[in-house]
Length: 227
Image: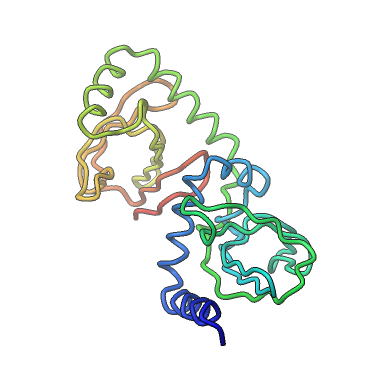
């Protein structure tokens, strides 16, 4: 076994030992990559009901290990005998997309990490509500000033991007989080009061700690189920 083969085996053993951690590292690079939106648009179920699949492509000339981000999904798995796209960080730090078709060597599944779950059936409606709330926020000069002042300190984006759904018994509220406390990871703290800007333009203060369910929504899909 050559030195490069030993290095590859050691790397893959580390992947198997720390699968979740390694997938998280690849995903972080994937979502930072400027071409990621194109692949997510082609396969919108990726990372939802299509899980993240880590594969290794072994060849005589080159090897690659990464996540399958495009190809043919048959409802149970990726067709690795046909053409597919692999996102790998083996070549460069920011990651790269490798088109795999007619691979001469062996292709092996190293592991699978489940996605967040099926896309919501009300996806289009939620996207519309998000757009409406953002529109109202942009027209409220006071809210824009308050956000800009806080963003300059916290390093937030130029506009609110967290759209949540909160349920209190039969009552449901959805809107942009525009104010509230932060937790130690600098995310919104749903153990206290947060201010939502609703799609209709009204603002409401809600004690998230009393909610039966708090769910962050991103572009109408599941993000993080907080409770």
